[in-house]
Image 1: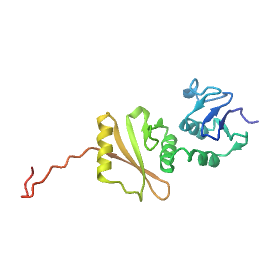
Image 2: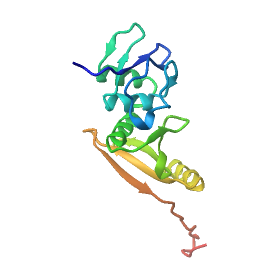
Image 3: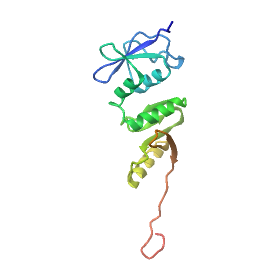
Image 4: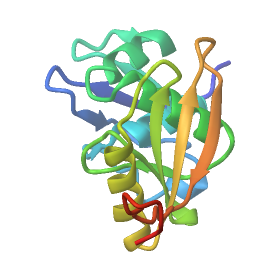
Length: 170
């Protein structure tokens, strides 16, 4: 006999609506409310915990692969891989407002996901690190290799001294 589960319905506009709430993890009780919209990361966390059944708008049940395919319309693949890796490790995460970075909620850290073949300009990296550190967060880069494995690197700010043409430091 299968355990009764909460149902989530993914609407055509990307919203995820909660059905009658049954047996949700304790830390999400009160957060997951019947009829409310929930964010994709909370939905993913519930799916990975096997606490919910996901349906499309017509009521057809979706498997994990179909659910993730629908999430990919809202969240970039590299971001989604990092989120899934962190959720498996028991981390609490949320997306940045741009949905291009992942925030480690209890650790005051922001993670920039990159594929191993992706280039990033030094200016862009410097600017990101500078902005994140000014906000009091740690900055990490998550590099995803071609096998889907994720490696994390913490980036700290570096200062480069200007060099005079005569060879001395300005």
